[in-house]
Image (tube, rainbow, N blue to C red; front, side, top):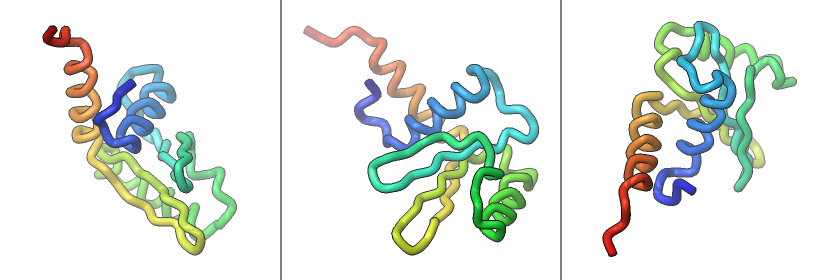
Length: 108
């Protein structure tokens, strides 16, 4: 268990690794993390969202050239959905740092 790393980072890392089979992201990889309360899930494509305006805006944002270096997180609140981005390099660095620390033997 990765206890110290932010839960969203762990979910992004796991969702990404599962969707790509552990490889690098392909052009057009448009997965994102959907968060509602204490629950979150990896969504393979924003095409699943029913609200046309939200879906179109999200697809446009995720297709811009800089989006390849970002993870998208959609946080649903009772009256809105907030979209947050995190640099992929930061997420990978944080998670991999924690994985490395777990691999070190603990001092006795």
